[in-house]
Every structure is written in C-alpha cells, then in structure tokens.
Length: 604
Ligand code: AMP
Ligand code: MG
Image 1 (cartoon, rainbow, N blue to C red):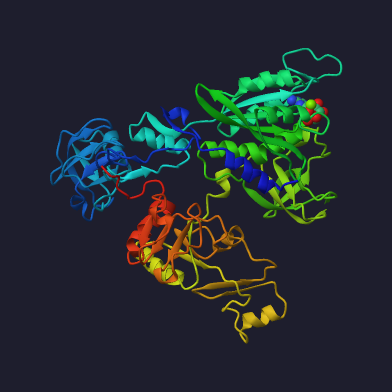
Image 2 (image 1 turned 90 degrees about the vertical axis):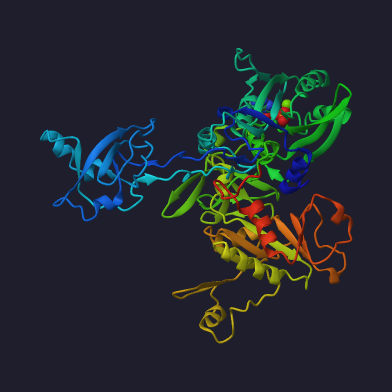
C-alpha cells in the first residue's frame, strides 16, 4: 500500500502541462494565461472627469463658498464619448459629464452639487454663467490619463488564472482573444454489468450509472472537457473497445472493476496495452485504485494516455477523483496551486481509525463563535452518495492516528472552495539555500536592504536546527513564563512583537507562514531547503563545485565565480552574480512577486 502523497506524486509525474491555444476571451474563464500581456494603450486614454460637473481652473475658485460663490462663464459642454471643442481660460468653465475628456486648460472638476446650477435653473437665471460654491484643488475629480493602465506596462503575467476581472482587463485592452493553456479532454467510462444508463428503464437487479455523471461534472468543474464513453461491460472485449475510443483524450478515467472481485479485467487490459501504476492506496474510502499509462499509436507516433481507474462505489469514486484526478486536471491546465484549501475544525463526532488508513469523512462545516465546526453527514458507507451530497468538506483523519473524539480539532478539505482560496492572502516567498559558509545570511541581508530601497514590506524567516532560539534568554520574563510551562509566550511592545511557541516537531513552512501573516510583499526565507518553496541556491567558488540542490529544485544559482559543473551548461537554471544584488532582486521580483498591473515594461 502506498500513501496518498506517493500516489499523487506518481499521477502528477505522468501528466504534463498542455500546449497553449489562442481563444476568444469569453471562453477562457479559469484557464491559465500562456503569454505576458502588455498594454498598447493608456487607460483611461485621456485625462477625464470622475463626476458630472464643471471643468475649470482650480485657481479661479480661490475662497469660493456657498456664501461667496465665484462666477464663471460657461463656454461649452462635453459629454462622455465626445471630444471637447472649447478651451477653459481664466474665468470660464465647461459643463462636463462623467468620463468625458477634460478640456484644454482645465485642471479640476467641481460637481453639480457644489455649484448653483439647480437653483439657477429653478429661478430661470442666466445659464451662460455658473456659481461655484467651493474651493477646488488642482486635480479634483480628474482621472488622469493612464492611471489605471499605462501604455507599455506588463498588465497580466503569464501563469495568471483568468477570472472574470482579468477577462474584463483583457477586454479593456482591446484584446478579443488570449493565449491560454488548453483544457484537457477527459474520457469517462463506467464499468459494470449491473449498470443502466439514466435514460433507460431500470430492470430488476440493475442500478443507474451515477459515477459517469459525478465524474463528468467534476471534470467540468475543474476546467476539463468531459467525453462520456458510456458503460463498459465486465468483459475484456467490451472494456478494450471502449477504452480504445477513449484514447483520443488527454486522460482516461474509468470507474469500477478495480476491487478484489473483478479487478483483473482492468488490470489485464492495462497489462496488455500499457503499464500499471499502482493498485492500493492507504486511504478510506478508496483503497483499490489503478493508475497506468495506455499506449496508443497515432500515425507513426506512440503516445501514452494516463488512465486512472477509480473504484466503483460512488463515494469512493468521487473522493479518489478529488485526491488524484482533480490535481492532475489542474496540472494539465497549467495551474500552480493544486491542493484543496483546508481549515481546522472542531469535530462534533468521534471517528475511529481501526485499520491505519487515511480516512476522508464526509462532514458539514459551519462557523460558530469564530471557529469552524464539522459534523458527520450521517452513515459513512461508501455506497451512500447522499452522504457526499450533504457534505461541504472532507475531514481527514491521518493514517497514523487511532481516530478522533468529539471536540478534537481535525483538518478539513473544503470541497466547494477554489484551490486559490487557500493561497490568496499569503505573502509571496523565496528561499535562499546553500551549504554552510556559502553566505546565505549575507545575501539575505543585502536583499532585504535592496527590497527596502524598492519600497517593499519585507519579512525574513530563518530556519534554525537548534532548540534554543536567541530570544528566549535566561532571566527574561518571557523565559520565566516558558520555564513555568506555557506552550506559547508572546511579548508585545509598542514597536515590536515576538512569539516563542513550543513545537513537538520541526515545523513545516506551511505551518510557519500563517504566523508570519499575509501582509508582506515578500518573505525571504533562509533555509528550509527540503521544502517545496521556490529556491535560489548560493554558491561560493572556494567551496568547490558541489551544489546542495539538483537543477530541478532551484530557480537560480547565485555564485561568486565560474561554476564547473554540468549544471552550469544547462541553460535551464539562470546563474546570477554574487556581486549584483540588484540583478538578483530583479530576478526575484520578476519570478516570484510581480502581479497584476506591475510597473514593469514589456520588451518591444
Ligand atoms: P466495483 O468497484 O466495480 O466492484 O463496484 C463497487 C460498487 O460500486 C458496486 O456496488 C457497484 O454496483 C457500484 N458501482 C460501480 N460503478 C457504478 C456506477 N457507475 N454508478 C453507480 N454505482 C456503481
Ligand atoms: Mg464492477
């Protein structure tokens, strides 16, 4: 039996990000941008009015008030969508509508409400004049040309997941299409002699095929295109024919036929036409799963189609889809965040773990008094699909635990939350790794200074292997509290905050980040070399040629001399110079920080 993580890693190793395609923007929702998008225009294109009012020269309103209006001659009017024909000279104003371009000479707009227009109209006074009732500053109610988007700037970065607002931004740039990573097509096949399609009458002893529909809806939900193959019978011939039909897709998902009773069929087919990946995963429900590659000859090319054989029980089928097929589809779509967001919740029911598998229990999560509560959705049989229909989360009971009792805290995967939801408020981060004495600390220091110069809010995180951290110095009050047994000690002063929290294990980066908080423009991490963080390796030539990480693990290498390793020849990993802190900071900025509307200019 392999763990859920091992199984997922195997699946993800087999699937690749698909090629990009150009499509109309309205069809791109949820897809990943495969190009940097720069603006060819300024938005707004001209200085324009943010209000309905009068465009004027601010200096003409000096000391104006309700009791002492300044009177200006109205020389014209300009509506949104047309160009002004009159200039504003001293002592004059142009009536202007929201969005209309600011006339030459004007530098502020005073709203109708701050003029005597209404009383003037009702008393049928001369409309060629207007009384201004307030003093305006230069720039009042003026939207500057390019204040949203400046011509030439990088507006959306390659890798951005397109949400409605990004699709709107593309439209505002005048783009009707975008280059995005293609959606994967997923062929779906139900197997079993007992299955009947929903449009047929139900003979005795048969059941309706529900897995096809759950799976197809899941595929659509996560951005794939489902191709329904129908129902395959429990015979090698029937399944082989159906599977052959599914090989045009980017992935094939079957359900059923993998449990003890009849799994030989799917296994035989995989053995004949491809490779078997794995069969049992340490999870419940969903232990029997098949994963493999089915070879396909297309013209002269041989292609391998990943095949995920989910268990037949409807609950197991959806839960295993969530754990393995969902991340595979997201990876093919070019998405970077593959994990479902999780929360910590107080469980209302006890759950026993008798056979040491990871349990995914169906729960309803509610929020009360500032904490999440999870309660089981009734009987947890893997055939009871309504237990999933009532659930909005999956409580995860680790394989190492004997179970939980009511009142314990459990981790819950939130089924209806988007993957990015768990990511949104994290500060971007990059780890600086290297052998000891390679100068990691010095580089982090220099980068902090460089980023502060660039106006960043920076956090620095150091990973230490020793148990005593400098801040808990003997004799200090915080030390005394810790000695007395407190699990966490926090000291707060008007200008600083420090926290010392006991931990029974070496904390993972994802456990540390929430404590640091989401408000930083960048977190520079020293160490955590085993984590999956983006990493930059520091190298000193006096330490020889050995590197700590393999080329796949690092985004760049910073070195003070030529590197004599095969890695140096691989153009894949950029090599940066120790002496050039600004270039290293540029690299970090470009690859790990920049987001929508950055000031970065696109290359011509
Ligand atoms: P299997 O994995 O083929 O042994 O199936 C396990 C259980 O899931 C059996 O009770 C099947 O009837 C049920 N099952 C299999 N496929 C489906 C399906 N497509 N829709 C609903 N139930 C199914
Ligand atoms: Mg079956």
